[in-house]
Length: 251
Ligand SMILES: C[S@@+](CC[C@H](N)C(=O)[O-])C[C@H]1O[C@@H](n2cnc3c(N)ncnc32)[C@H](O)[C@@H]1O
View (cartoon, rainbow, N blue to C red):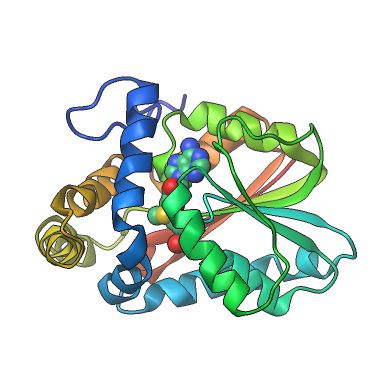
């Protein structure tokens, strides 16, 4: 582990100990907010979430054009990345996966409304029901931070990617500008849990969000962890003053 990387091995919601208990807590929490997840996402990010996903999809556009490229959107939630990829897909075959059933129900509703083929499957990102070296591209937007074991998560990405395959991780990160970081800190610690709590009835879900972001490695440290896990090339770009980072990693 990089010397400056916080001693965080995976998400640990407050009051929860152990990997399995953390994963269960995360799954239940997303299950409780699934019906209002999209609305809250757009509202609390001032619609920037759409831009962040669009930028990620732009960066991986060439891979989506590739005939028969196998793509999985991990932690797909309500399928916003999946739909953005479908909208610009060339020859790729795109699947979506998540371990939270109510999120997949929402995803299925959105996908079927648009008559798209993208199959969805319920699976834990730490133990995917996929063959070794079977995918050309894996996307994971705002999901990786929630894994109970980041090293295992990276190992699993490497296992299922073909040599030359790409992992694209879009995730919250730490703002680089001090003034912006201070404003963002107050917004996420105070405003976000309150608005999220009022709108979903689950204040703990929206208290978990800023806490999990604060504990998650910064962009440099995540890149280092990805290289150490075995990715041969890792690039990242920050968005919105560093509040979000997109990491692209090649196997
Ligand atoms: C913040 S949501 C992101 C959803 C979507 N990718 C988006 O861009 O809005 C995080 C998602 O990760 C899923 N998730 C968290 N841990 C997971 C795991 N170990 N395996 C599979 N899905 C997981 C949750 O169920 C949730 O749907």
